[in-house]
Each structure stands twice: as C-alpha cells, then as structure tokens.
Image (cartoon, rainbow, N blue to C red; front, side):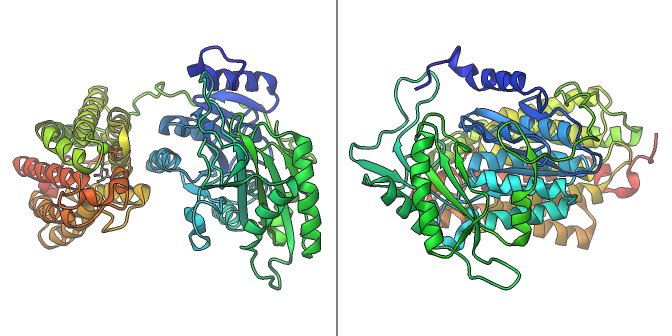
Length: 588
Ligand code: ADP
Ligand code: MG
C-alpha cells in the first residue's frame, strides 16, 4: 500500500513536484510533466517520453543529456492528456522535430497521437515510437502490437544516445524502432499493487502461485502457475525471451545481449541479484555475452511484487548507443559533454497563446469554418438520441452525447477564436482541441485530431476555396485513419470515411463542384455505414461485445455520414464556397 500520501488524487503531481525539487540540475516542471532544465541544442530532435505515473524511474527519471528531453506524466496508470503531451513537446522542441516515445497502450496511442497531429499541423515534424517488448501480450509475429513494459528503458536509452550522437529525426526514429524490435521482456508477479489512497490491491495472486506475463498497470498476468524458486523463475523468464533470439549474422547480431532484471516495486535488490546470478550463469552456458547488465528498479508498478527480465539482442550500432554516456536523475552512465548547454529560459504555458495575426482573406475562410461547425453542432444535436441508441446496442451508449458535446465545444471554440480575429488554421486547431476535450471517448479524440489535421492545410494568411476545403476533408480523414489505426472492415467510422474520401476526390475532380461532391460522397458513406451492420466489430470498445454488434450499423460510421451530408447541404446554400473564383482576394 501507499503509506505517504496527502490527497490521493494529487499523488502524482505531488510526487512530480518533489522530484523536480530534488533534481533542479536536471529537470524543471512544464505543464503536465517535466523537461530538461538545460536547453535542447538547436536543431537536435527532442525525445519526449512518457505515460502514466506510478512507474518511476519511468519516465520522468530518465530526462537529461543522453536520454529524454521531456516527459509528460499522466495520473497514476493513466495516459497523459494530449494537451500535456503537446505542452511538454512544445517546451522541449528546438527546431529538430520531436520523437514521441511511449509504451503501446490504447490510451497513450490516442493521446500522444492527438498531440502529434497538433504539432504537425503547426509545422513540427513528429515521429512516434510505441515500445512493445512484452512477449506475453501477443505472439512473436505481432511484436509491434505487444504492450510495452521494462523495455521502455532500453529503447529510450538507445534513442537518446543516438540523438546525443547527432542523429537527425529520421535517424532517431530508425534507431528507436530497431532497438524496440531487438528487445524482449517477460515478467512474473507475486502480488498486485495498491493505488494511492485505496485500501485493497488491484489483484491478488493466490497463495502458492505466481502470475506470469504481468502488466505494469496492475494487469494481473496472463496465467497463474505454481510458485517456483528464484532459479526456476530465472529459467522460466529466460527461456521465454530466448525463444525469440534472432539468428546470428555477419555485421549484425552476434550473441551479445544487454540484460535488464527489473523489480516492479517491492522485490528487494538482493532478491533480484539472486535471480540475476542464475540468468548470468545460463547466458554464459548458452554462449551469450552480456553487455552492461542492469539489475534494479527501472519500470515499476507502484508497490507491485514482481520482476521482469529483458534481453536486447545487440548489434554494433545498438551496443554503442547502449553503452554511451547518459546523465539523468535515475539512469547514469559516464559523463556526456554538456559544457555548451545553457539553462532553459522558459516552458510552454497552455492557454497563454495569443491568437496569431491573420489576414482578412483567412478571416473570411475562418468565418465559413465557423458556419460549417455550427451546422455539425445542430446536426449532432438533432441525431443525439439516434447515435446514442446505436452505441448502446454493442458499445457503451455514449456516442450521441460524445458527438453532441464534441461539436458543441468545437463550434464554440471556433466562434471564440474568430471573434478574436483568428485565421482559418487557428480556428480549426482550437476547434479540434475543444472537440476532443469536450467529447471524451475514442470518437472524440479521432474527430478532434481530424479537425486539427484539417487546420494544418490552412495558414492564417492565404485565402482558400473549394480545393482547400477538399484537401482539408482528406487531411482530416487521413489523420483519423493514422491515429485510430483501424482498417476497412474493422467496423468503425473508417468504413464510412474511406469510401467518402474516394468518392469525394473522384467527384470533385470530375465536376469541381464542392457542395455536390460532398453530398454525393456523403451518400456513398451512408451506404457504406449501413453496410457495417453485416460485420462484427474488431476495434474500439464494441469489439469485446463481438457478435452483439451484428445487425446494427457502426455508430461512428453512421454519424460520420450524417454529418458529412449536412455539411454538403450547407455548402450548397453558400455557393461562393463552391466557386473558387468567388473567394476573397489574398493578403490583408
Ligand atoms: P467510445 O468508444 O470511447 O465510447 P464513442 O462511443 O463516441 O467512443 O465512439 C464509438 C465509435 O468510435 C465507434 O462506433 C467507431 O466508429 C469509432 N471508433 C472506435 N475505435 C476506432 C478506431 N480505432 N478507429 C476509428 N474509429 C474508431
Ligand atoms: Mg461509446
């Protein structure tokens, strides 16, 4: 349990304040997390790593030269919000782009992805690394679909070293994925952890047993087996990870491995050493050479009793980065040269952004966007009950409310920005943030990211006409697909959005008529949405309810088609939007 706590809901932020106070030479607070207290050298990619709190040293403990540049920190075991990720990334970024790194969990994927869309819309190049080292969570051929556990340390250490050595964004991304693909972990738990303020552990392991395949958010493990000795446990974990040892190849993996024995919170260091003694012995027997092993607490899960074993199959490049200097509060190796790093002068403060100055032409486009969002708001309100009813059949019933709240928030934020003379891009970025924030839920995050990406098509200077409107719709759909990761046939809004995209482009190419093209594409989307009644959900919340969704169209697909139809209809009433010649002249 947690003995030292004030208000349990403030536990994560109280801990973060204390951490920063204890390490002023390394880190300073930013909105929702920490950044290095020294400036990121100009043009260097910023490695922004994070996830929920409750895992210290992961992730805030690894901020400093040779490793991370910033860490957004969510509440205990929950992803940081998109605005926290955005703020930390904005603070850390200094002209070299951003690598966002996090363990592969749905909430983190969504929130980091949403922040990435916003940074991209603002012209910052962003790459995403999802750590997926846990062999218990998916089969070997789906390595990148697995969840991330202690491998976070290795992947971020190696990526940070590559960046410190001068890697640009492409190179940092390549090395980080390579490290992830070479890393395997396997864990076992003896007792669950207890959330601060809670009286009861999240799970218990029956006496005399242990749970293998642990998660780091209080997931109980994939199966329970009789408790073993330290040696038996070492053998079990090692055989698991070594099952996926790659072949040795000239110029590649040669039997050299980095090894991490990671305590989850309440296993003593001496116990970990007892396990490591056996691990080292077995690795030597198998002819493997261990490079700079780590035995201790690196990725914890509050006070969970358990441990994991991580093995990284190194080649020369990965080994070099694994051994390179790093200077962070919780992970140190040698001494990186940081004589040229001035102290950071400030961090990004959300809400303090002024509305960027906009041309009259862009303000005019912004006005049309405000009008379009008002149409979406009215349409979502009109269909709220219907969408909610569809979602209640195989989901959780909140889709009507999500769409109503999301569109209302987006329309209000857009209006407020336009009243401050914002241009098209700013109006859409603010609307996107507000949609995600107000709607909550998966579809809210996706629609929010869609609006944000649409904003990236515009700037606050140039005017825009039908071509840009089509480009914005396409960008929005592409962002939804990118962020949600759904494929056609998964029974999601993508099943309506992709046919819509295709029909829109074809129709607009043929006719140059924006309103007509959107309406026609919306009809195609409607048909595709209705057709999702014949398939079983494989994504999102309703996948767990499986066949229950059969016979009912996907709520998100249907709402997409309904909203697009209303949008097309509204364009038809403002013919100037459909006529590129009628657009306002460029420039102020
Ligand atoms: P939640 O699922 O969080 O309750 P909503 O009920 O508002 O959110 O939205 C549900 C809709 O979200 C689904 O009908 C589906 O169309 C869409 N959705 C869920 N997951 C995805 C995904 N990964 N990609 C695209 N759309 C998705
Ligand atoms: Mg729902």
